[in-house]
Structures are given as C-alpha cells and as structure tokens.
Image: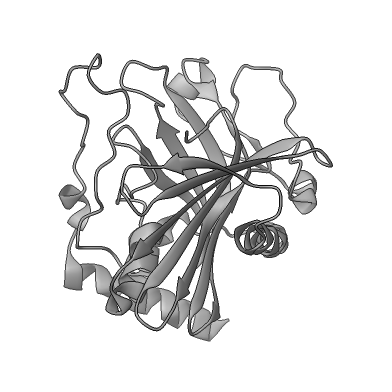
Length: 274
C-alpha cells in the first residue's frame, strides 16, 4: 500500500514537469457550412500525454472504494477479451467501403445471438516507430483521433488505476445534430510487446438522467453486475443531452515488421460510425 502512494506522489510531481498541456487540445468545432460537410474528422496531433501524465493530472479523482475498483477491473477484463475476439475474427462482417483516409476500411456485422450490431474500422500506420505513440494518442482523452469527429469531447471522471478509468464522452454525429453522451469504464492493456488493447464498456452507472429507459450490456455480462453513481452535470440531469450506451468499443493495436495495424470496434446504442 505504501508503494502505491509513493507512485501517486511521483505522478503528482510529473505534473510540474510537463505543465498543463490541456490548452493544446483546444476546441476544434468547425465553422464550415453544415450543408457542405456533416462530419469533420481531423488527423490527431503529433503530441500526446503519457499514461503517467494522465494519471497525475487526474489523481484527485482516484476511487477510494476498493471493492468498486476490483469489480471495475473484472468488468474490463471481460470487455478486453470480447474486443480482441471481435477484432481478430472476420466471420460475419460485410464491407462498407473506405473511410476518411484511403487505408481506412469499414465493416459491419449483426449478431443475432445477442442482438447487437458491431462496427469495425481498420487502418494502417505506415511507421513502425509510431507504435507506442499510437497507443498513447488513443488513450489520451485530450486528443480527437481519426475515428471520432471534431464534435467529440472526452474526459476522465473517475480513476481506478493508471490504466483503468471511467470516462464521459460527449459528441454529435454531425454539426447540427443533438448533443449526446455516455459514461463508460475504460482500460488499456498491453497483451504483449507487439499488441495492445484499449477497451470501453458501459455499466449501471447512475448519472441521474431523467430517462426511465433501462440499459443492459448485451456483450459484457459482468457489466450488468457493476453499479456505481456519478455526480453528473446539470444538462445531463435536466435531460438536455441524449443518453447513449456502450456495449463494447475500443482499439486493438498490433505492431508488425514495418507498420502498425489499428482495428476499432464499436457497438453503441445511440451511435453509428458509418
């Protein structure tokens, strides 16, 4: 336990080293005509925060409930296993063409067993040296990545460990669309020196949204056993934002001899990526 708090103190000190870089991730809402473009995707920047820096910035959100932390870890172990399965298994997917970049491919499949639709997007990073930075960029909540659009904002709302957190994401599917949001547990796992997973999954997170709709995770079963409460903002409590629910989402990142493959998986009630 003492070693754990020494770690925290070290990470707090790291804040003074790199400063508050959040100003670098400024709002990127477009002023372009919505009639000309509905979704604007922007390339991620070259900078990023490391896991240690992100932990240090958000250490004040550290969960003091050991049982909740243990249960969150169990949920995300299952989520990571499912994400790997959907990423590496090609059965049942139908191609939906190219995406924002030439090497970005879209796939979709409908799973009758659990009645969900799974979107898969794959792309290649043509530089082996960018493996680590790709993982950092996808984990950094201040960076809008290639999959999300310019109307997406993500923040950490609870910390369980350096690689296990709870996030809130707000987004629009297009510039004039309604504001939506979700809460989800998120984890980053290094499976091997060449493979990493970033997984997200919603659970029974009580955020005081006025909707009486009941949500159940159709992929990650342990998520249905996880319950906690979050102090949400007034616009959520007043129902001004539409609630979404993440059955499963995240990234499978794999390093090869001369490139890095990234596979994005998403099954979200309230959001489709194509």
